[in-house]
Image 1: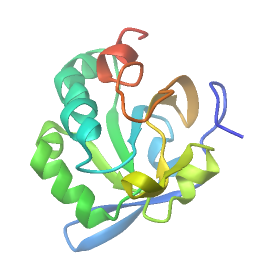
Image 2: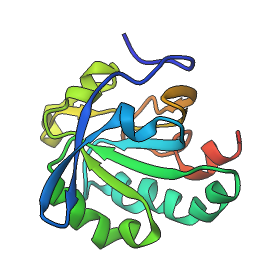
Image 3: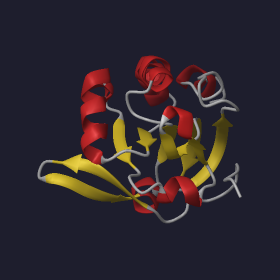
Image 4: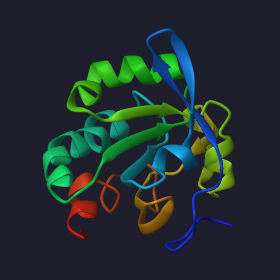
Length: 162
């Protein structure tokens, strides 16, 4: 069953690159007491993710900050090395967006946002979505019907609801 507005994020560990290599990030601990935007993409460096989704949050980062959002997190079913390289390539990391990998797709599956697209080489990947999470609870959720588009899950669309 897919996560919905009003649900609490499940306990899950994602991975980020730290100063000494990969580091686990407990999502429930990381979001405790914070207002966080969490958006997910089918894959780092894939066309819509790279050209539209991440740039939409880079463009709107300051506006989210002004609305009291503590952090913007990008999640993808990729390893932390890829997420670090992608964050650097897009400018997301320098813009202050946290890049987290869900390498085993465990978080993605736990919230019911997984899908497969074998012709594109995407297996156990994440649907495209954006959510506002306040103290671990989902208060806004925008899920794309088609993973190849970025309309309702882009930064501007979520920002319009805050």
